[in-house]
Image 1 (cartoon, one colour):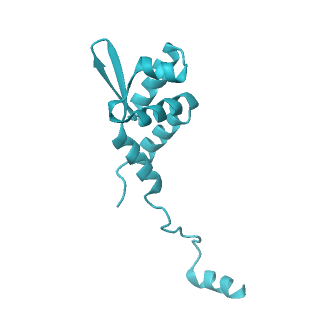
Image 2 (cartoon, rainbow, N blue to C red):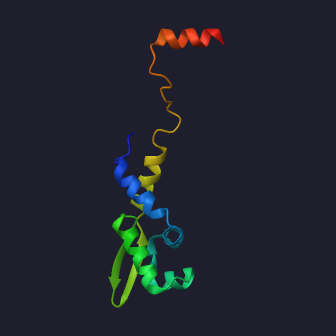
Length: 116
């Protein structure tokens, strides 16, 4: 079954996870589970200045990997598990399905293999 995620979107998500602070924040939110964490809690765990953390979280939200909700004065962040599964699926969908190794005519490939 082909994953619905397209290559451009997967590339965007992977690029955002390519930053160590964003990767740490995302992994922390995955650990936190469905309840997520308040931004202040993320900051306590990662020891990142608030403005820097805000930037990194906004990039993860933009990539669709993190969702945010306001609870009074608290901004709660949650990993988007559906997006995470989609990205993992995109990377693994065609695992071990084989790759055409040559565009040469089959008889040419067979002749080369017979010489081995």
